Length: 143
Image (cartoon, rainbow, N blue to C red; front, side, top):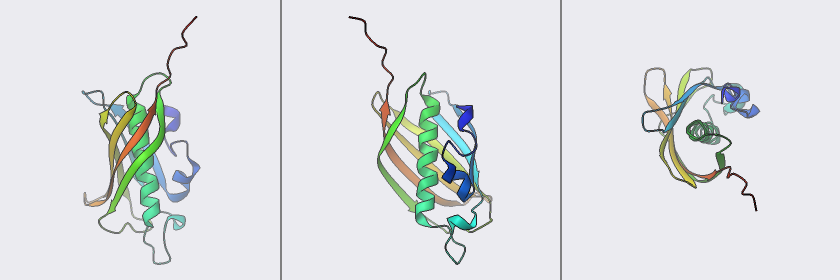
């Protein structure tokens, strides 16, 4: 998983000003990830506010990373099934924000997660919840 720190394996994350910095698993075997977001011009409208789709990209990536940090071996998220994003206040160009993704529930085929973007003062800027398809790398059975 260390290789995904930074842009999470997606060049767009770094291009808009995001970076994943740490991840782990809590006492209930549920994954989490933290990162930062300092919006670059590419992420913003002409007035300097971050576009809603950019929030969604970051929050989706944070939830996927958190889920993958809870999975073992070659098991990985396969696809986002459903995602809801809420923008509560504007994120502005060049201001620092904190990003966090957490697994809420992990089953054999489906994972549920949430992610938040907060200001450096601790104010909630945006949040998302999502449902994700999990691919399990099943061992090959001999005939």
